[in-house]
Length: 183
Image 1: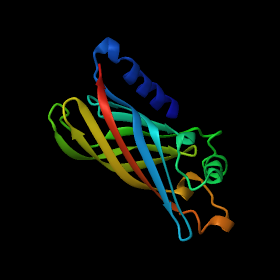
Image 2: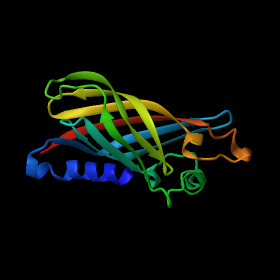
Image 3: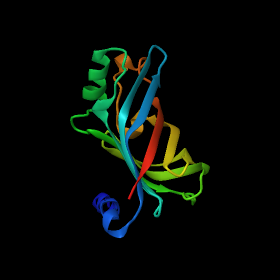
Image 4: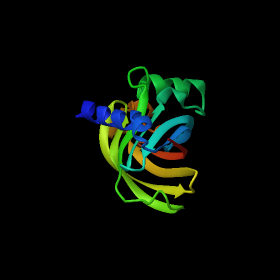
């Protein structure tokens, strides 16, 4: 199933030059996360979110390299994030791929609240999710913003008991990206 989805998305996104299909892309979206635990608050962000949106099919794919996150409380905290929790050498990317549920008229400027249904892959564990997002279409770009939470246990990320008061079980995530038309 995963191979079929990958091949389908690949064919959709690589064929636009031949079929004149219009896609919207970002290469510098932002992902922020916050772990607000009783004894410690950990915040980090990446400005390397990559994504593509096919407005004809209402399908999308977004990914960010796990080791691109910066802003931890210390270099050691970042190291533990990459080596012990997200295991970025084994699972280098986090991704969300799927379809926009609502029909949006992308030819018409405006603000839209949509639901994105797809597969969220964190730490190599795929979970089907519906994530509410906001779209602002202005003709030359599409701005996407979203706020959602990720339960660590749903993605097989375990927190040692010795630090369970320093790392939240549920991580808050914010995403912001501006997509530009690619023809």
